[in-house]
Image (tube, rainbow, N blue to C red; front, side, top):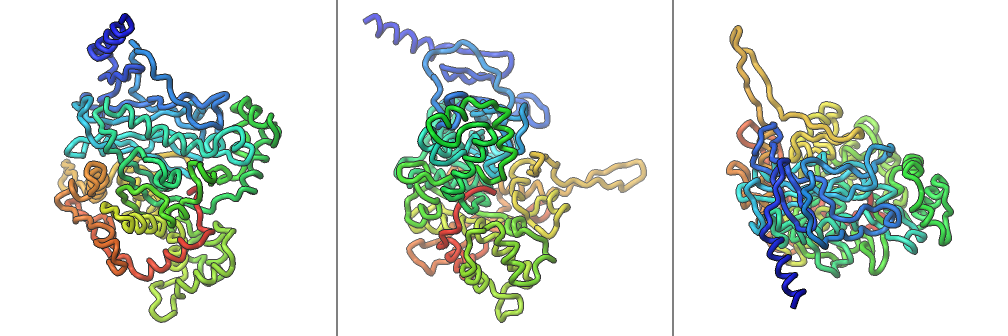
Length: 575
């Protein structure tokens, strides 16, 4: 009787209390309470969006938790302390790695919500998973302030930090025996499960979560859709994968060899029961040294086998239908292939140049497969060839091997499975900064990020933000008249409207800008193999409207994609 009385008292106390802080508005989760920040990007207080950063979603992956799946937080008890959540959490250890830049204790997330949103408002939720090749980057380059501020019906935004490179993707049989494979992907899933449990306190709807990601983040989205071969429920209802960054997955022999290299640099045995305890007790300096001395790409998602998070290559899971049937938007930048063709236009003059340069990223592709590929991409002088130059053949091939065809492949399978809300796109507007550096790449890889995230340009040194285009003209003496050319801003607002509309309704056109074209579904009849496959091409236009338009995917492109997606050598990892 006494226990029942005490429980009733505690419940009444926890629901009645009103924690406050001079730092900012407070969201109280019971086990933790957070003070957020309502300063807008322009520095004006009491903006339309409140930000809460550095929120833990799992225990610090330190000591015995290193190289293991994320451990749940202790969410028992009731706190009276309000934590300062006005700033970002630290990034995870990057590559190149530097002691003091980034940290192992990095499993945090960030939340944006309308300032006036309160618990149980049940607003749609958009969760962003950053890219960076599974070895670099952090949520700080991808602020969701504009997404939340612009959406007319209210939206909650979330971004995730997850373990990278050696700390997130150390593989091999020794790790499998005493640890967990792919903890970086398991971090993402743990963050999504935290969102399921607590996003309601920030005004979000746990049953209306959509995940987003670009490049390695896009690959992460696909792997979340294909997780456990579709045998377990997913903590989201929709997924948007941008420029899905896959490449050749390391073989088991390669993965074990990279483990042995790491053991040698760290000073641990490469086998036996003492290996993983040694890895877990190693200094961070030794870990950093190993990260920097082992080739980039050594540590990325691996296939785990039956029962694992990744029981097989995602391409095979998709082909066999072992995926979760969720609403889907998939697309790519038209210059993705130009970014990864491993050469400049003048470098491609013959078939041999394509063999030597394009396929340097694909050492497992046989000569016979390359011969078949070249036949699918007719030479520039061949009758009916769509390619004006060898460069056009090269970059089209480099793009379709991974970026163009993977989004088409998943869209095709989901539509065939009866998912109605399936949409496709191509992004044809260059990142202005990248275009000025390498104009031959056009809408280069990551160009979409420039428009979705405040002029964001991702480079080896991290993220930079460039103001959208504005030009000043002096028309009269002593008079300065500002003429604003806003074609970048117009496309930014159009794209954000599409992206957030998909989060809110499953239909990117439901809350589109009035001047934007209707984004048609990928196919009008999934059961009809002759049905046209359609996608939206996003383009810059004037300072009042874009030149975005719908286009039909050609039969030749689909034929080439069917070829690439049938190749076992076209597997998944980092970009």
